[in-house]
Image 1 (tube, helix red, strand yellow):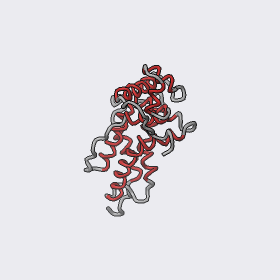
Image 2: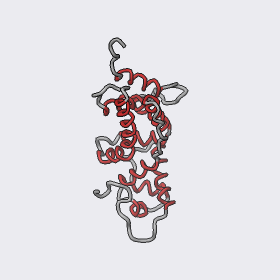
Image 3: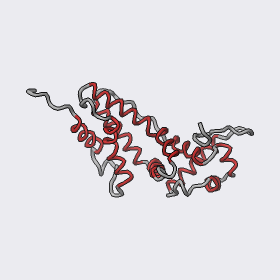
Length: 211
């Protein structure tokens, strides 16, 4: 792993780290993002000042800002509830509902917007976000989709990467691209169900002739 490519890349000599200080630094970054600070505008100096520690304290824990931001992203991760496995349709709804609820969290939304703004200027950080946050969720959905192909609910030969994007894209659009959009359940009643049913209708196997 290259320097700065992951959290806590180098243990520094000296007194043992205080986990409370780690948490305080991460909390500061999250608060600043919630208040509208962009990743580009954040500096180790500002983070340290806002936390009430010296820059050396931050650098003893992280080799640089990107390494710190990876831990910030990890701090927001939740374990998705287990899928029941009784219905491909219902499991897909559960996947989207988990993503929808996360999109309602101000902190998760602030981090997502910040990271999306860094796609071109900081592709390394975007890659870390993909590995840290997106990959596990995407694989969970792919497993449900593969099961749908096996059970005949999804026709064979469909590009699962594209299909996954068709399910999650509307949530992303409402969370990031549409300021008038909302993920609130009261305003978008049954949104996850509508998305799943609409997409599944387009990829279902054709009816059997004479059936």
